[in-house]
Image 1 (tube, rainbow, N blue to C red):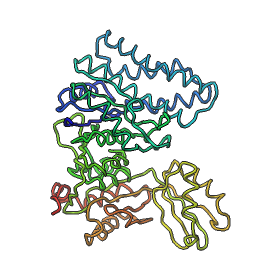
Image 2: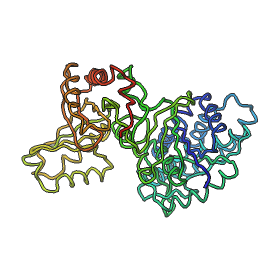
Image 3: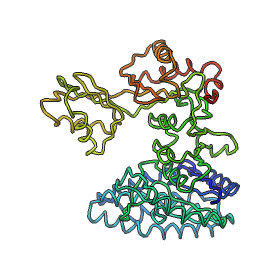
Length: 469
């Protein structure tokens, strides 16, 4: 088997023509010839969802909508000769013929199944792959756009949070992709979606192309997975909250997964799932600084001197408090609540219980639906449902949090010095992460104070540390 490198370009990389030219340069200079995985161009998935919603309401002029999609892609190649733009426009329009029929059907029936919705929004990645294929061919680089449903990236039956099935996917991808690499042709693979054994299109959730890239890397036994972004890598904090935040050189899979789960929108949280069985290193690379080292993510643990590697923050959360006498001791209550919310497609980030209260940490967009669902739930057990908004989560991530003495004292000493009160604390669910909740208005001073405590002195030494013996 040849040496394989998988490179993935996120939607932010396709934001401007300059980014597209940088992508082409990176691919052409890559050794060995890479397998490329692409996201939809910036804003395309949202546009597809908007078009779909308007079709459901019977308000959408389908032809006008498709012209908008094409125009969005042509903006990225405005500097190319007219002959090239005309050829690519024709290719894109041909690709959209089937989408046109789907949208016309939706506008007539005013309904869409979850699988049809998945198929419609998959066109963002299909268009990107086709666009990049044509541009690489224009630059005399042999390339072919390949769609994951045709390749045989097989998933379970979940339409919008699917998981890849191995070893079927391994067999299919190896058979289809490796011959291209042997001939020096760049395979451009669509991210974000796969298909069930019955041929239904499924997606891996928003921004799920990182997960696709990990699946491809595992299937091909890649030596490395590069995720190209419009940011330099994981940072010690959100730079909008802490301007002194610095790039982190190394993270373990578990540290990176926790940071992603807590709200660091660098890598999709599920990216690491396929790699636990095939420890392939991941490097986050900055599109516009291609030779600069990014954040390396691997199976190995590297404990920093200060233990904490990053102070993550998430403002998109809310708490739902379920009150009732002895509610925390009711057998099966947690399972019943969880199932009730799962039936509504609501994910629970975390659950904390006491004798009289169950606290659910949810995404703020799910709060209203969850509240209404649980107000009608188990009368006589839950006496009231209280919503708490305008809060924020602070996550502390680093190898050794559970064994290093004094970490909590330093963290909450820093929070106290900032004049911030802690609303909720959770520890123990992860070996490498703790989190707590504060009022949203106190998020910035709390993050700044913690960051100063752990990274204010000898920043490079504190972040990078040395490998554990």
